[in-house]
Length: 290
Ligand SMILES: [Fe+2]
Image 1 (tube, helix red, strand yellow):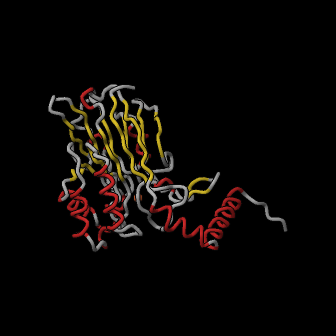
Image 2 (cartoon, protein in one colour):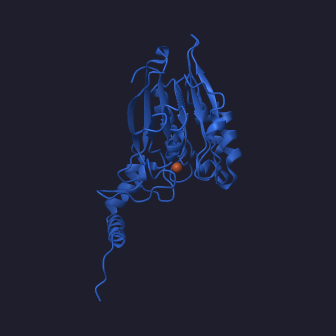
């Protein structure tokens, strides 16, 4: 009997052969398990918008995301990342969720605190919840550790970032889409429409909803850029809420046009591999123009 090969079985075969090759060739395994996860790509982008006040021109924002500490990413690696971020002299540091892989099982909180505390940014350190930060009743553990290290946790709320001359823009953070309760109207309650509004959402696909509100840019993580990608076929697994916008820069033409950037994150989860999805730090420079 001839069995018809469907697209699905074809894909499964390709994926299967990739994993076999990866499994059989110690070089491939070694690369995806040890080499690529330890690489770091630094991407630099301008964050342009006419509503960004002139006095914010040149302000440097660094975004890091998805460290997943405790799952094949340890404090020695995180210490190097902290030094790297501080050496880049950011004005603002943003963390877009998934700090520890399993917060309720993480045993090195006492050593993690001084490292997060060492991160320095004169205009502030801000963060939001990812799905792993809520996992295993971890919500309070995450909040405590971030607040004790001078990160402001933005949970469906906003904050005005102000300069001495009185100019400002709003930074808005919403809860995670998978395990939290994201509430955009609540988060935007104190925001002024005629200001530049920057949203942090762990889940990139919330950009669809965000484009119905006066939000001009959104920064996200969550996808890990697919974590393991195949040539031509792309990512093996993309989590829910990162299916539409898995990685990089997007323009969403909703009621209010929105620019979205999806960072690939630092660590790994579920599988200790990265392939064609290097860890990433993103540097944004504010520009008061289109
Ligand atoms: Fe993650």
